Image (cartoon, rainbow, N blue to C red; front, side, top):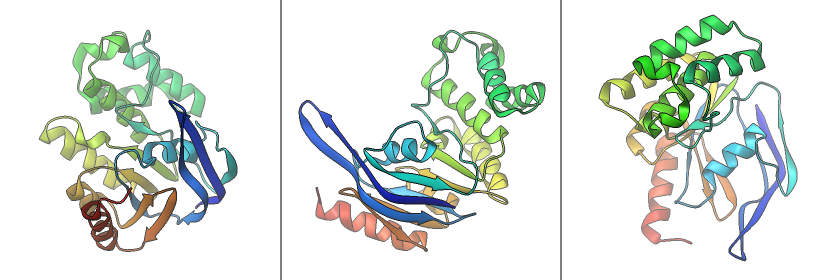
Length: 221
């Protein structure tokens, strides 16, 4: 499980103070795929970064009893001057897994041909997403952090991503960000809404979707 204890994150943009997490006390349960919802700019991606430890909170802490993946999605970064294969090998060494096995898994999953062996700086955002998602799914975590990645690509890639994700969910949980209600229904059991720095949890994804749509229809700030 992942425990947020008095978690606060505040930052300034153009001199304007914004709080995306306001003293949140919350526990993400073990082995559950949670759809994280909220309007644009609510701080969903920032929250994922806080959970992964790639962004420091202003105050409070994130505690976990298991392993958490790095956030994967369109914005996920890889070293631009290394190839997809080299980035994959680098991650494999960090996590102490079989390098060749992870490279072959990602190569097969991404299906980008010879581009897998050329610098990432030449990739489209979709190609970066395929590699990032493949690396993430090729590693074993107790909780996966997914940010919109399966919305990238054609129908075959979306289905392939979903199949791999569902396979991982047999023994793991996830926190899944997507603007697609359909994807939330297909890939999540429960839901959480981030609104004005507050996180509200729903055991039923349909209840979360209904509340999120209500929030959006009311135009809450």
